[in-house]
Length: 402
Ligand code: NDP
Image 1: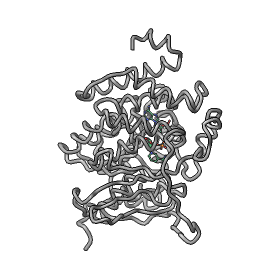
Image 2: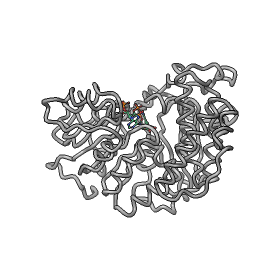
Image 3: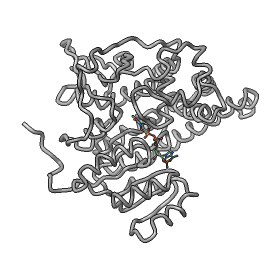
Image 4: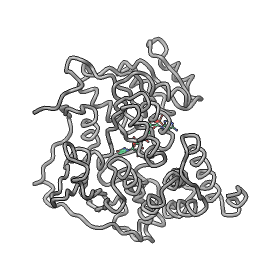
């Protein structure tokens, strides 16, 4: 029996994409472009990439285009002159885009910068496809509280969480015993610490299976991404950290598994193409046709699984410890990681320094339970200052008073 659909075929779904110029945003637009009659694009946002944002806004006839960087507003206005598309700029413009009355919002701004616009979409009770995992890491309790009080629907986009979400449909929560999050192991899965010490940004972003933005690609290489996903899974599915295991699965075909109390294990499989989980959220609660590659297990032949190596990938242990400590610690972990990854991508620190900076930042900060959004934003800012100071050198960290 089909579930009751909230989206009758005759009504186009009104959609907004926060982070439309990025990897997830472009994949979402690709799906929309395959059936334009089914969607009405309300708002599209980017940060600096005016050319890509303006092209998408024209092609998909967006009502509003917003560029987060105020300095880029004038060139976006110029690029969209005569199109009839409204233009806005700056952080407040991003929130305005999220507040426009779209039925479905893709939250795909990279980093904690996506928190406030995501919250704005959640607060008005929208269906929110959540790619911005950093929002859940730094404000998980607050975000979920807002989801409950507004009646918003949170649809996980991350392939692992989307797989779990698919596997638990129709299941009672207390039937779930454990979750297995799969990880590709990234480009350095077989590298020694010595080899990783000299890894360059271009090596780190060259993911073996997935095509993604630079930040998440580096997170995959350090395996911090899996650590962030552990925290994300804890919030989304309400399970304790010791019920969530990590399995390195280099083929990236099994996107995650759910173990139930009768010993059954359900998994979702598919080729590593983000358009598959995105399509699941875009059509939800129905499924939509998607022009994605089809899985051929005979071509793959073998699926492998192994435990992660916490010595070579210390970020995973840092994230697990941050979840155990709770409170604002995951927010500090996330902020320090964002600063360290940006420093690595601009060649200011080495690859192994990323986890070291995160660890040192965590050791320098002590915060209790976050009390609301302003407190979370203050914690995030303080952790960033600490991480920046640590990158500049320990004496500077002391000077920052941390
Ligand atoms: P990209 O770097 O490709 O895109 C990021 C998007 O965010 C762009 O639209 C960018 O605009 C915008 N942006 C960057 N900084 C800011 C800012 N300060 N304020 C507002 N907007 C900003 O990232 P991805 O698409 O790869 O990832 C997006 C999110 O999805 C991340 O949280 C990531 O962890 C998550 N995710 C991604 C997956 C993937 O396969 N890519 C898989 C699972 C989760 P501009 O282009 O103009 O700079």
